[in-house]
Image (cartoon, rainbow, N blue to C red; front, side, top):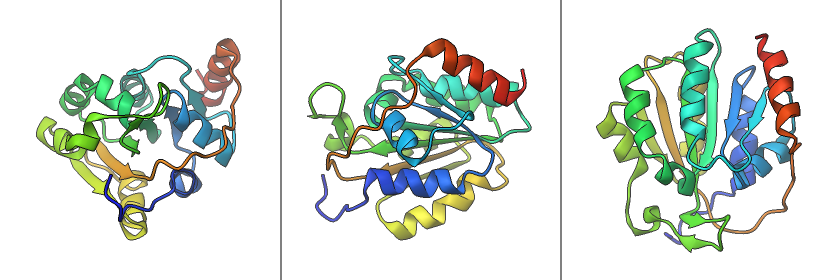
Amino acid sequence: MDDTVKLNRREVASALLTARGDALLVTGLGSTCWDAAAVGDEAGNFYLWGAMGGAAMIGLGLALAQPQRRVLVLTGDGEMLMGLGAFASIAVQQPHNLALVVIDNERYGETGMQATHTHFGVDLAGVARAAGFAHHATVVDEAGLRDCIPVLFGELRGPAFVAVKVDDTPVPMILPPRDGTFLKNRFRDHVGV
């Protein structure tokens, strides 16, 4: 990882989730679940426990089913690499209300901190661009993070993708509820379906 990258994953999650307004949130498994819970558990958060590779596609389905609501997917680089096909599906559908943020520490945090492909140069924002995302960026500093927030939560004309480079400093594990039935029912009630 580039030594100049200093963003802290919890600070990034806090900045994004504080700015989200009433956007619905889908998290990937593991660290992004803990990051969202650390900022504050709420009914508009849908946490994926053990569905690696599925966050972006669940976000797409939700964005298509709820076109009047903003949908934010917050996931990690390992999970996004597992679901690269999601870039193409999202780009073909062009949901105006979907923002996808990858917290990229260049590590597989759930299996021992092995280097992911982004560590070796795979450019996820480049993949989003090539697939046809309307907005795509890689954020490496606080100024870039501040600049991307209006794009993620403002009026979109197509999906937005942001890869946020963070350090791999361990942060405390803050677990959200783990009961899948409870999470599903709470989220459905919040969405009103």
